Amino acid sequence: MARVQRKNQSTRRREFKVNNKERVNRLYKQIIQRSDIPKRLKRETFESYDTSVKEGFDKKLRLIKNFTEAYPNLEDSLIYLAGNVGNGKSHLAVAAAKVIAYKQAKEINEGISEFMPAELPSGEIFLFYVNWRSELKKIRSSYRNNNTKFSAIESIQKMQRAKVLIIDDLFARTKISSSDLDDIFEIIDYRYQRDKITIITSNKFPAEYLTSLEPSDLKDYRYNPMTKEDLDLATDRIASRILHGCGERGVIEFDGPNYRITKE
Image (cartoon, rainbow, N blue to C red; front, side, top):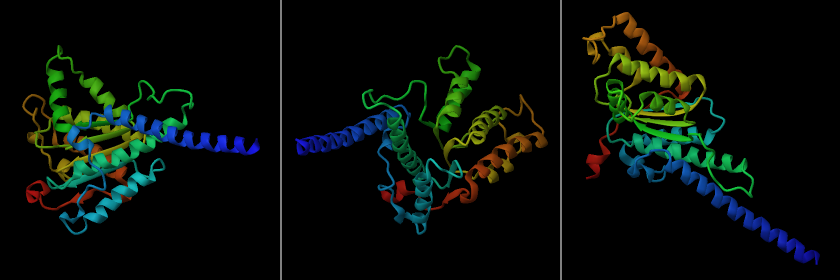
């Protein structure tokens, strides 16, 4: 009889482990589905990243892996991938976020009774992806047109609240305005002050790009002139938070050839 009971207990433990893994996978899939990560990028992983593009890229991959492995005990909550087009920065940003998302799913599952369904808590944003250029167009349109269904305020708040935020292509190929700088600061500062995980990709290095701006470079300079002193203050407070958020790791530079072209 005792042997049968031990066998039943062992079977239940195995079943619980299987069910537990299924629950975590279910929660993970929900996080990814709600993240707004584009379909093409959802499949990206660390394993599928080709480090042979250029010597030294394996070390860059290791830096990013170290970031994800340290979660949730991160010393620095921001990671900034900068450099050439076609070096897989978006690939790595999503791969890193996915690793953290799976750890999030485990944490959520631990807080849910085994008798309750594996569902994400309502109102929480665990992972959110934005392509900055696309989001910026919608934000600008919202400011110009009050009748649009898209809310700039809601978008910015969502970027602030997300536990993990990917900003893809920050400062990408568009003339920046003073209001853009204000929005970027509101997002970066909110997350910086609260140590929220932020993963940024860009073709531009934050300090070099922002400090090089002149008032006449701003898109709205004719209608909203800004002095050089005010501009330097606005850009410095963004760049300083980004760089301090990266900690000793600093900006991770990608200077290889365009993989999309060389692959062909």
